[in-house]
Image (tube, rainbow, N blue to C red; front, side, top):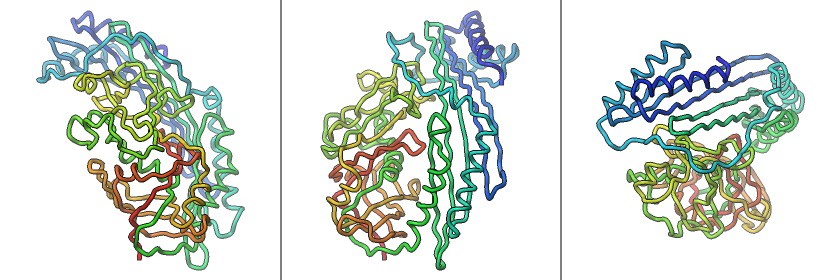
Length: 445
């Protein structure tokens, strides 16, 4: 891949060429990414990938319409094709509802999620880490059979420039590693998984990953079945984050304006329990989706989408904000989409154990599956396969599996009785602490 200096210079050349051709205003969007991944199984390297990606998009106004063209090549011929592509695209546009090209905002915050430590880790070090995880998986317990050990890293540079003075760029990177395994005992089998991520090799410790994977598998062995009925429950943070991710689209103003969200026009209403505050924070230090500007060049801001149960705002880009008569929330995700950044339920002050003890008898839900097939992102209804632990006297008494949890996401938000202090982001910018729920419908035996 060409170096960043050459690519930024190409971006400036594209803007100059656009203006010379009568395309004004004009804007370039530049995306560069690099990724590395290695997979190890039983002491052997199974897969090794190194990928580079570059894409430059030119947008500009031509004869009253905004056209768009993209390229993955950096040469004179590409410049000519970009200009021609913008003109042809603009001539085909039939709607006046287009994303405009605008000058920069007055202020942009500083945010960092790029680590030189990650950048300095060699491919040999990543392979060695995968081998160490695999070796520990193999050596710790005879019941464990390693499945895969993966170490990956990724970096991205995103830049926006236009002829109205906008000149923004942001770099981010991260490293992550995970292990999966199979545990077998007395004719029963269970899978285990553990992922860690961060911004240095210390964040992806081989022992923590291997031992966590083994523990996850072993605690599932001997899992029983549940009888059907309504039960009080604590939903582990990782499972609640999966549920929040599935239904995150209901907080998009774009979906609301298209009739695809039941939250349309409900700002100011109570839609969740008073213990629930839902935050979108693109300025979170070391957040996976942190960036001081969105894909339209608008300055990003931290905001509570739900504050103590009350819906305070939906997520907007400039187009949806104009329709609603409000300011953008800085959540433009490109191609007209609206999406959250670092999106999470704010943690409470109690531990997960305290939530279990307060519940006394019920269910700890640790995993939810079938989220795409078993959830309706518009109505909020869900029916999902789950597993976890039966709780008696505030303590786990046995693992349980192959039961279905049914309910409604909007009702679930109102039925949350307590929020724990164990907020984590499991390799995703959408996170949650564990939450206690008044009642869930369980379909078992």
